[in-house]
Image (cartoon, rainbow, N blue to C red; front, side):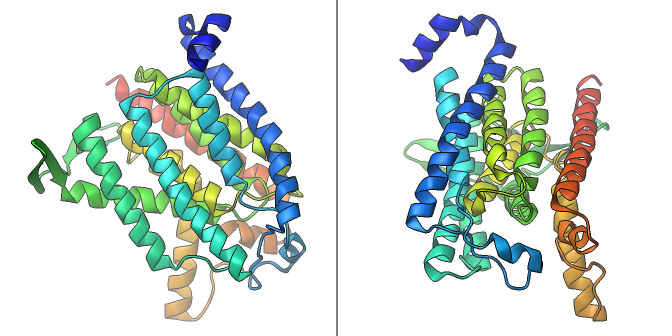
Amino acid sequence: MLIRIFSNIFNIERFPTYQVFITAVLSLIVAGILTPLWIKFSKAKDLGQIIRVDGPQGHLVKRGTPTMGGLVILLSALFSFFIVSDLQNLTIVAIFLMISCGLVGFFDDYLKLIKEKSLGLRARTKLISEALITIVFGLLAVNWVGISTDVNLPLTGINLSFGSVASVVTLGGRTIVIPWIYLIFLFLIIAGTSNAVNLTDGLDGLAAGTVTIIMLAYAGIVFRQDHLNLAIFCAAVAGACIGFLWYNSHPADIFMGDTGSLGLGGAIAAMAILTKTELLLILIGGIYVIEGLSVIAQVIWFRYFGKRILKMAPIHHHFEMLGWSETKIMIRFWIVTGILAGTGFSFYFMSAMR
């Protein structure tokens, strides 16, 4: 009903690009309204951020800052999406992945708050949860949406078949294909992306800004693929991040928490999988690759050589220890994200025209 009323008033169905734009603006406004309300509620309930004692000492002043703002981002994005558009199979599985990863983050945040420690869910529990989410998402994507198990090598026209090892089961008269290798591949994408966004969420505004840029790049890709609903979904997420960023910019009045970082990471992973740009995600989401590899390199180097190659990992903390301000790091990482996402976006169009 809301969709019909909104469409009739503004006649937006005639202009697909306007639908994408108005969704982003609406989501921004909704997040801008809800965020201060959540800040007020969090302060009343003493839902403050727990700061790692082994992190940068300058971050200790952030202890007690309202957290779990990811709830506002996800709810604002969903509300705006449903106002402008309706559900289709592609958006259903994308929303499923975003919300499922967000729920894992929610329980992680909740445990941190009640334990008053910076450790929530165990790493093993997170990975098991993400594996189960991947199985459900992957089976829906392949058997219901019809996503191919082939993976495209950008700019080559070569497709790698990841569906050669598969089982076929019959459930309720319906045949279900279980592509084992492809599911493992999806797990690497989903777990890797969601946790890498989580690693990036260590400075005020850093994760929200990078997610905005990447989701806008994917909005362009899915629009080119004639998946308007997915483009609207991307715009809703990007707009919500911008609205939240007003309060999350340095010095932050609120943090998104794992609820936001894992949920938004799930949304990005969903876009890469559903648009069949899985490998291009390495470039489009390259900032998260850099952040993740910086932690891996730090751990391996210290374990085998007893030295650290960075002053502190993830790499944004390294620059912070060098004396860069949070704002300088945030802006420069946004610029790098824009360059990488723009390059990946260009590579997609070059591949599509081959």
